[in-house]
Length: 334
DNA sequence: AATGCACTCAACCGCACATCT
DNA sequence: CAGATGTGCGGTTGAGTGCAT
Image (cartoon, rainbow, N blue to C red; front, side):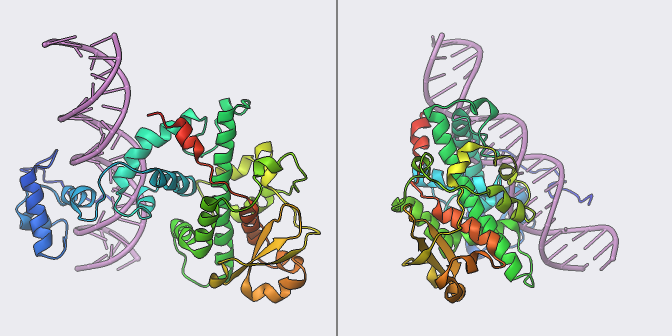
């Protein structure tokens, strides 16, 4: 509280763009000392007329050897949009998932390109919701936007479900930050599998195509409401979407459906995948140690304490997944 | 060629959190 | 335990650049 800014003594301190000489001084100091040490004392020791903060920024955003230069590729852009849908403006957290990219760079990319692209599609770049003006449009753009939203909602549901599961199982463990949860999920085998499913165009029907068929609908709002209390900020979507028909196709009800074990690589993380006997061949994921209980009927799994998170995960895995990022290309005219 | 405008991106600023004393 | 200090983060700014007129 009331702390003094680190660059309070502005006398003799240089500001603005860095010269090559200054870069060299900073690089030399850090390489000679095998690290930056205290940023506050660094400028003096390195012979720089800069504040420590400025040095740190220059190092992190520009001079670090692992910095990747050049334009972002499509994969990186997709990942940024996905992570932003889950994490919001946590640029540093997002940057941690993109080796060689800095938070500043990602923030700039978002503000100059991706944000505008989503707006052009009729998607609110903050909430990843459809903008009100777009809700009545039933054109191709709106459809792409809807698919986009569904993907992010699926990813977010997975995270929420696991968050809920973990917090109930490991309630004794020290609380990690929300973003840690998201990132651990994202990097877990489940997250990996999810991403793999999306990229491999797993043999499932599209939710869009299922919309007109005998899709079994449940209530997503029940799931999100239950776990929503664990979350803040970016969960606004869950609150008002349950009336949105666009989401209905992804909602299912597991009653009277048989599931059989399915070969899948989530088991290594203590999860097993089961495939339903329905036409759609829906999938359900359960912890391996509940497999015995699960083998006879899926209800034993869906009725236990992890009901909501499993259901959410199931929704995620039932969501078929056509890695539809085509909107990026369609709207990438800048 | 001159001017204005839009865009990009490096850098700054202030705040919040973590750690230290 | 409270205040001081160090660091990291996100929002914002403004210089530089390219393009259109």
